[in-house]
Length: 65
Image (cartoon, rainbow, N blue to C red; front, side, top):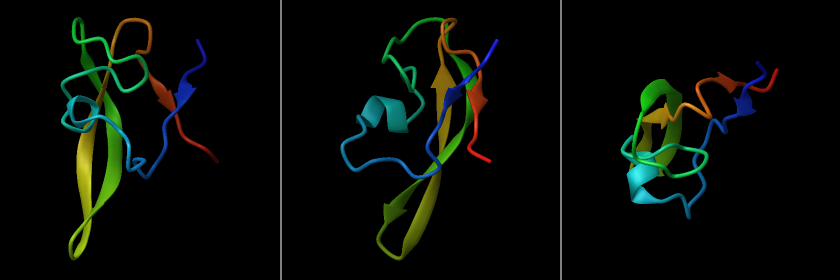
């Protein structure tokens, strides 16, 4: 099964629930979640690495080459 491209840098308008690993990165569902990767987001003084979770419909990621 092909995965969905996950951005390496989170967009400024990404929801807090998705940034905190509390909702599926792709669709926003909050049940049946599993870790699928990480993204970075800018913070004062640098970058922060944040967990990314996916639901059963989005169980994996594919990063750009």
